[in-house]
Length: 94
Image 1 (spheres, rainbow, N blue to C red):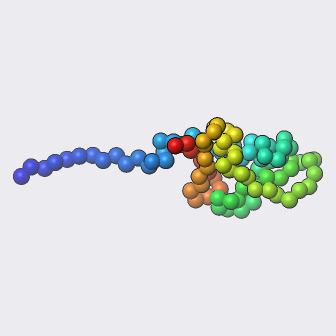
Image 2: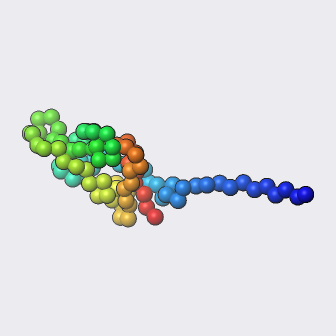
């Protein structure tokens, strides 16, 4: 009897195109102005919000445009994915 052995290495398809995480404070500044900062309002992928920083007035929290943030940070063709929670955002390019 002859036994054949082989090793399979499984690499997620998206891993090869991962560029890095999203700088949420930068995203808020880019999208709403220099005084805006990011904070986590609730858990989950939609938990990040932007608000004016201290001394910059009151405003209703606004969402973070994550596809735009990836494009601003990593250039054209970058896109955003969130897997399970507010700290699981990453940018990718195919």
